[in-house]
Structure formats: C-alpha cells, structure tokens
Length: 295
Image 1 (cartoon, helix red, strand yellow):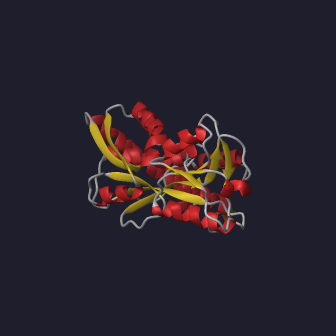
Image 2: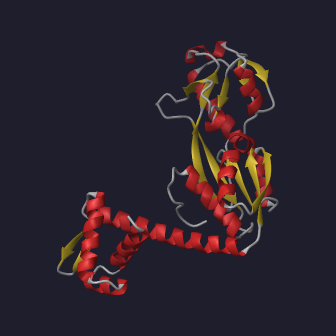
C-alpha cells in the first residue's frame, strides 16, 4: 500500500460516504471505488460493505484504517523532525543504559543510527539499571534504557522481552545444574528475582556458585574457557553461536523473561534529535513495526 491509500482509508473511515469522501480527497467516486478494490485485492480481504446509509467497515477494514492513521501521523512527525535536523548543524544526546545493553546491543544500533544522522553525537553512560533510573530522574541523562521492571514516573516504553537461558561451552543436562560450577555475575534486583524464582521452582538446593565475577562479560569469557555455566538474559551475547543454550521455562511452560524499557523523564530533554533516536529504537526493537502511542 502507498501512503495515499492509507490517507484514502482514513478519510473514508471518518466520512463513511463514498461521494463525500471522494470530494474531500479531490478524486471521482469511480476512482475511489477502484482504489478500494485494489486494496482489497492486495490484502485478499473485504474492507467495507455498502448499505443504504453509506459504507460500513469490516473488522479488517477498521484495523487497516486505524493502522493507516497511525502511520500517517508517524510519517508527519518524521518529516517535521527530519526538517528540524536538516536546519540544525549538529546535536548531542546524553543517554544512560544498563551495562549489558551498552556492551552487547547498543553499539550496532548506534552505528546504524549514525549512518542516517551523521551530525548527531552521543554521551553514553553505562551503569546498573538502578543508577540509570537515578540519572534520568535527576535529568543528568535525557533518556535511559533499563533491564527489569522498576517503578518509574515518566515516559516508559517497552523495547523488548528477553528470555532467560543457561549458556555453556559444552552440552549440559538441566537437572545436573546443582552439581555443576556456576559463574554468577551482578544482576539488577528484578532480574535476580526472576532467576531465583525459576531456580527455587526447579531445585531444592542452592546453586554451586564456584565463581562470582564482576560483570557479564567476564562471566562470558570464563564460560568460553569451560570453567562453568552462566545465566543470561541478553539476546546479543552470542552472535557467533559459540555456546550451547538452554531456555528457562517455569513448571507451567511459561518462559522466564525480563523486560527491557526505554525511559524518559517528563521534564527531560526535548528536541528533534532525541525524538528521532527514540523513534529509531522503538522501530528497531519492534521488528520493523512503527512506534505506537504518545511519548
């Protein structure tokens, strides 16, 4: 579908009368009818039904019209922001992110964003999620990315759900975990709660913490050397497929998951550069879907 088709559906949904909608769109009624038929053919579904009172949208048609309105609003915002960036010579964004996100996920995203906006610079603070909250609340960072469910009063957008998993250098049996050396690393309180809840549901004894290290990256390196297994919730930890993974599920079969959030204080920074970066992150983390709702 073209942008014009979304505009057509949106207008017809607002004015459910073919003649009046065609007039508002500055096209003839036969042209409007043909374009509706083309859209129905493209999506292989019926969009609207004719009645004595005008036209009635089917549930499929209502969905397409609603999504079309969101897309049109988003495209309008993007044009405004792109124009603002074009008029400005440079910009700088200060963000705070959870350590694991900053190490394993953010670099590739920054590379892609800089390819689109070469005149934007970044100050990136990597720290624990609890500290990210403090930096955003105090406006020392314009936006933040946290791992886990923390209470936050401000704008909060879900970026992704991360499944917990066991990773090791060689295959292991899940039921042997209490006997095998664990390499533990610092986690936020919400993440630790998820892991502890899962462990206590499956085992009656504590894990064999043979090593306690200061970061996930050290844990990863030690697992690579065959010193034990680790627990992670970072999707980008193993891009080359060097480890064996065991996804973690509770007894009912539900995956053990942790949420990753993008946060911004209501009193925080505003501007085309920051807004464009937020839109970019939402777009990349939602499998190519457009951002939804208000920031």
